[in-house]
Image (cartoon, rainbow, N blue to C red; front, side, top):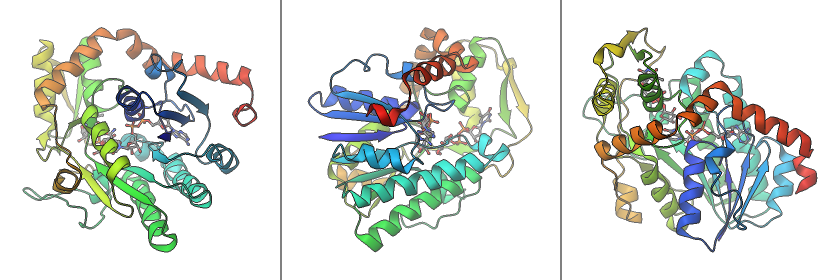
Length: 342
Ligand code: NAD
Ligand code: DAU
């Protein structure tokens, strides 16, 4: 199988590429990534020189580049590229609208023109909005996004749906809950709390800390995406989650316990505007139809994640300072246009 991954230098995309090439060493992966602040090629340092891996620096909104790239005849596209952080979407939504909506449209349109046989759009549980206590969203639940990030993802989901209904384009949407694991940018709750605690900084908990999220280890998400790419049905939506939401306070206290750090580091701060209270998904469809199950327990996953951040302080420091970004910017400026090099 020859696949194109967009956003493969980010957290989930890089974990997916590693998982995929380890699982199918005969397959071929191309990675299209703009290398925004969240894209980091050191996430794939162990993969970079493999003969069946190619990296292209570029923007999913660039239709000339995307059109040229898709002439490489891919069996499937897995579309991760997005602006992904809710807080950033609150302070500036423009990039979210551009990349998440225009970018998804651009790649969908080129994939349709060039008759790509399978397109997986990686979406989020946030499109369903906040769930009441005890309630689970299934794939037929109404969309009720509350942040500019969630709204931009919902718009992209609907574009995929419209391409299936209108043109018979083989698009599939996945909606995962919160991921955690190695290589996650330390702006998201779990890596932020671990790296702040390791540096003796305060751990900012929004509001009362009782908002609930349903955490899955990124490896479990990658396994689910693999099932969807190989066996998912065009036009379908698949939720991916553990089905066991926990409060932010439970997560932060457990991390402090694993790290052996004091609760005094925790600090309650002003709440996020429009902060969704509870995400909770019913993912029985992906389990019953595609045979996917959670394999990493939350406690084991948190321990492994803490250990990874403890062992990679250099990655955290350079990611936070933007050192990696500066290095790759210079490298790609020296190489000239990506399109010309394809
Ligand atoms: P991330 O922010 O870590 O990575 C995003 C990647 O996309 C980066 O490598 C970035 O450089 C790249 N990118 C951004 N704009 C681009 C553009 N215009 N052209 C090409 N590349 C571009 O994100 P993540 O957490 O890995 O999330 C990946 C996808 O999964 C996103 O679509 C997100 O909405 C979705 N998702 C994330 C989670 C989560 O918990 N992190 C959960 C459910 C769904
Ligand atoms: O649910 C899936 C989504 O999960 C993905 O679609 C998004 O891309 C991803 O960023 C994530 O969104 P959240 O907003 O849920 O994740 P975040 O890690 O930013 O926050 C998790 C919870 O922790 C949320 O209730 C807000 C809270 N929080 C977050 C930060 C960064 C804090 O209390 N303090 C913090 O400093």
